[in-house]
Length: 171
Image (cartoon, rainbow, N blue to C red; front, side, top):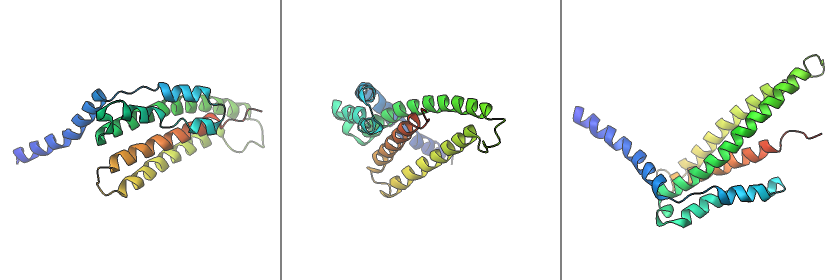
């Protein structure tokens, strides 16, 4: 029984070892996406930037075109967008709390902006997770399921980051 449990634990760790190897063997840089975003003047322009660094990563080495390599490249760019999303969310939350504080005595201010922002983001996280799980499930364990799910996470995270960046009224 101990042997069986040991084998299961060993097998469970193999995907992690593969992912670690992929991180070491793919050539990734945020530069293409970051430069594109910097040059963008509209949200539509920014959307055209999504996937540039992941695609370059996949083409930069033979390993980038493997299943694990594709997942690694896509996940690295998803991390880029996730960092933007989190930084923007933090800034928006600070603004929202300031707006709520400024409107504390206003009888017409019935909604708390910070609360709605938090609720929206929590709902979005559930949506992202469920959407990508749905896309993954369509491939029923096929090798493309991992890259499909990673691509979904990249695209949905980038879209939310872009949305949040433009969501505060500029008056």
